[in-house]
Image 1 (cartoon, one colour):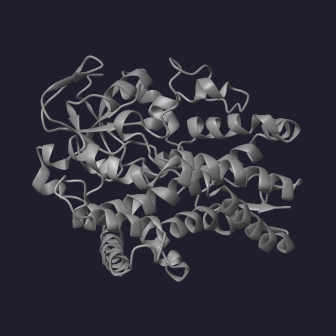
Image 2 (cartoon, rainbow, N blue to C red; image 1 turned 30 degrees about the vertical axis):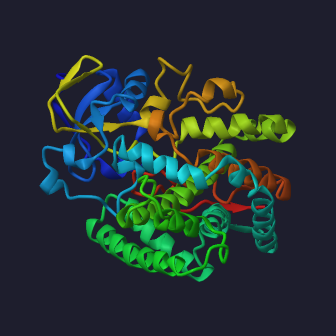
Length: 403
């Protein structure tokens, strides 16, 4: 098959969302770069091999700014403001430096006691029922509470925010995604305006800190423009909970589907890091990296791609490339975490996920807390097929469990 042959995934969309890995495996066997039509209907160049994806993530000829697309007018523009995933250096360098100044390792580490308290409170509320949808009762409320408290989103607004977020990342309903983006834009614009009128020190949340960064005096250029502030609020809130919801629910689902692995983890808590890293490799929350666009004609893994083309880097396919990971279709928490740290679930290079330490921290607290509280945790129906959200962020709709 020629690399420019257009492989259709649209007709197989339901099966693709249920289990995309056979499709990735088949495409990758024909070459690390393929021309496909995505489930949403757009034609793209899909990069699947680990080496090719990792190299492409650092290739400066591939740009994140949509204005490099040959179809920019029909592609549209930025979703909600402008964020780090939608710009290139030097803008990206400046934005990441401004956000990193506030989103520090120390600030993340200081969240651990609060994460432990939230986990305990959720488990206390779950325990009497003897069973629950783990997504709704635990995997969602933990990270949404953490990120919203960190950024200063009122508790009463979090359910609505999650609905908008879910609509935006879905790929099957463009109208709902547009409505969600409109509602979230209006909401975040209002929230930012509220933060703008707080006095310094009146509120210590991250969003207020970013607003103050935008409002700071000086002529050195170190400030967030209004559209950048909106975009960063959107990115931090959505990425700060959607991916962790999926990490937690996928980890529990995989452990319950692999009782030998769960038994090993219960017997040796030292395998926790391996369980988290293997989940990230085996079932990454983000199936693909943010779209790239060819700023000039390029050749990726021997495949020529014209200027202005859309390139999709499949993190999920790369993470199951047998050329990089031995027996990649096997879920094995005993893999060396140092080896698994090479997985690309959080991307690579300058766009490596800023929130990766927070996601790992939440998982390292939430998983053992759940397993310790419910030693007989089990799937409510082990024969039922899992239902995955139709989204480029791979996550379960529900995870019914009992104890």
